[in-house]
Length: 282
Image (cartoon, rainbow, N blue to C red):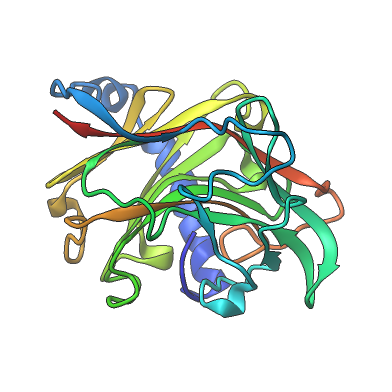
């Protein structure tokens, strides 16, 4: 997910083709070699396991919201209106958060959804950020778990940096995308790699999405498998991942990355989050 109107629809579709090609190039030798990790010892610094009464909003000391349409500044030709209504975001009473995208007319938009963030409440520089999530599916549905530089109000995107931990196209629910955006490598030119389930789909069960991030690396994981490692030398521009970032959870409807919903897209759409945990190295 991005914070402004980033690139043309054509550029995103070109990027999508490159991601798919990249999946084929991810050889068995690469998969084995990239697993050679240094030992990292972690201590928990923040977590939310979403305990609380069913039908209530999540902990307000941990989460705040973006409210409004893409015209409010996050763009990408998305179609939803983000709210903080319990019809779009609530605890389910079973230790989980449920974000729901609905097809409904609301404040001039044809869809509603929710976008939660820890901005101003929790930010961290470096560490392990992980979430256990069951994602939605369907053409035009765009779930994400991601991070933005905490200096975004004074340093515009993409200079503030963006780390996309989990990003999926609902029409390709067997593929997860992990990306970074920064100056010279943003929008359709992001540094990215995809992880594909050979059997199954991400919407059928919970999966753990994570990054481990340090001064000169960002490692991407799905269910404990390291599928991408990014270092400063891999980027075409400045490394801007040396400051605190905050976390974001959302479902977008439509937009440059996924295209429009179709008649085959069922609503409501739900993303269920079992937990989020953040660690730092000891």
